[in-house]
Image (cartoon, rainbow, N blue to C red; front, side, top):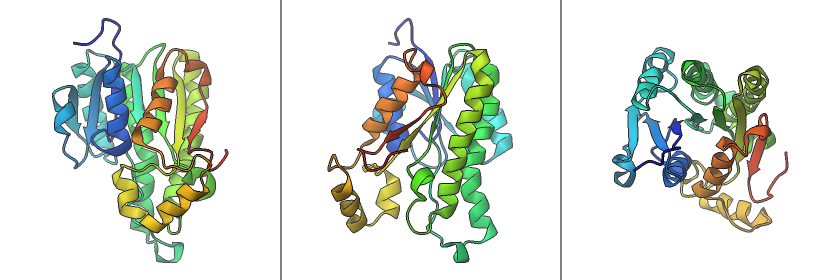
Length: 244
């Protein structure tokens, strides 16, 4: 049963990894949660507790159609929007990256945030929260072949600040979280060799990788009433591996 004060939360890319961890955190707080997923199945342990919609966040028309439908399923409003959907797609050095790769990575990680925010804003009001999931790559350029991804995530942080200024007078706070090495996710399982993971952990002062729960904790705080005045902030979640 949801609490009387339950918020309505929409999380893109909420079926795996960081997005799933964020969904679990909001559910544990008694909030009503909707997630989108493009291809990944919704895990059984949350399937009966979330509203799940199939959505390709790079498809502007589909976003425009689907987000209001999710809002209606949540009771006609979205209190918290978490833009988590994204990904590296592939490691491509600049001299091997074609236009299609560049455009797809930008669409998936940056344009999607614009599409979803635009569609969600009519359902948001004073006290609303938008949290965008960025990456350490926005600050250090990412690993080899991650130029498009790093550029897209830097764009997410620029858009976050612009939205914080634009939406502040409407009482909507906008912030971002920039994770470092977060294991238990498809991202690093696919794109970061184990040797590189070990090297990153060894160079991290806390001597461990992060988990989806670490990112979720920062996200839930920024989405809270207490976190509202941190609007415009990008919170680093990387175990002191780097400073912004």
